[in-house]
Image (tube, rainbow, N blue to C red; front, side):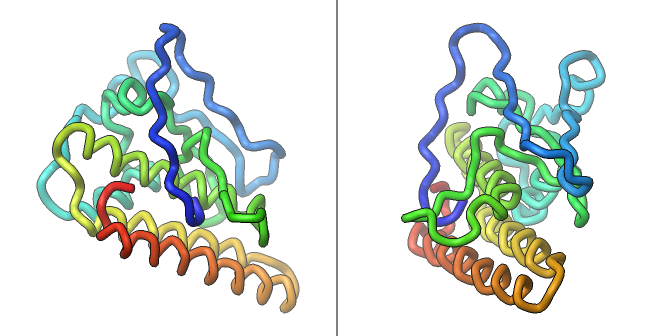
Length: 192
């Protein structure tokens, strides 16, 4: 997510399981793996938490975004999609298959930052999920989602070959991250 608010996705009512869109290409650092497939093993990996647990919500958000904590048990039913995992050069990230980097006027490298945006969108949907459950996450959760977005964009920028490419992507990463963080501050770090 760049500087828009994702519309709240409605759960699918067709009775069929939504198909997660997969990123194109087979780059080694963005290999998609569906770590939350159906079956008994998936049920065991799916968290049973449906309300915000007490404690550090910043850490909780980081665990969700990196896949260290599986999505809440009814996340797919409530939010209308199943997040999926990708492996990057900097670790696993969970993704919103409907997410994307949206930038007014499509200026800048929005496609290059799509993986970071899809993880960020999943984080914002977690904020919406817990808000719908009546137990909103603390502001630290949104701050953690924004911090992960910033980190992922700068990791991408720093992985580029050549000084000019690094400079270009670092500049855009700073612009996008600052816009997101200012929007979060404007919304008092609550659910978008």
